[in-house]
Image 1 (cartoon, rainbow, N blue to C red):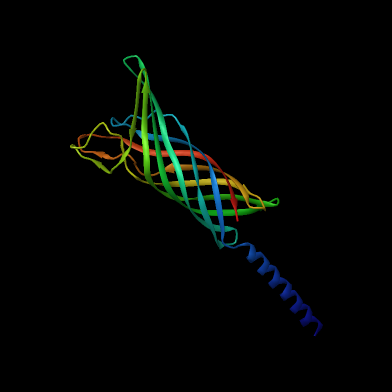
Image 2 (cartoon, rainbow, N blue to C red):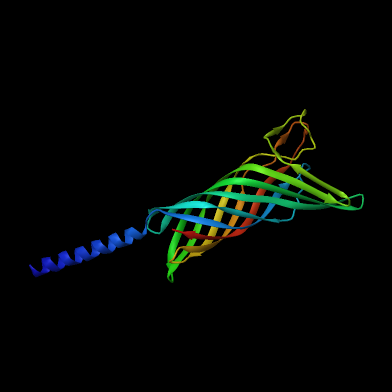
Length: 227
């Protein structure tokens, strides 16, 4: 009888412990924002490697954290993110600087691993992202020249289209990897890297032998709060 009673007490304690642990693994929401260091990498129309420089942008948005297994979470989100690159070249002895800025609405779809570390959690996440370009511009400066052109998003540039307008594809897909730390109070910081998987430069019908391939790449730092 005594053994059965002790067994019952142990089962109640164990059940309470499991229920307490499960109560911490609940749906949560996060607000985050930070800085981007972005570039446009790939090849030009002749197949030569692009020699762009990074520019500084930013990102801000929300995500939801869904527990799927002990220490593992699915973390979809929605972000506003700015990207682009800077290019410097010389024309007839005049130094020209061209800066491309692209603004995206992005949906990262990450799998996140969280391990106890001190009073908080170490985080490691990875997964795809889907982006859609909503605005952008190209600013060209050199000597007395200053030209600001809005970007138009198209998949194909026809021969009848204005060939002097900067064109890009709106749709972007790539991969995310991030690592960071989250405190017991919900504050977190993470280091992000991002690699574009698809070309964002459109097809030009006027070009018969175009080898260009432009992709978004970059990294960044995020600060946020989970509640």
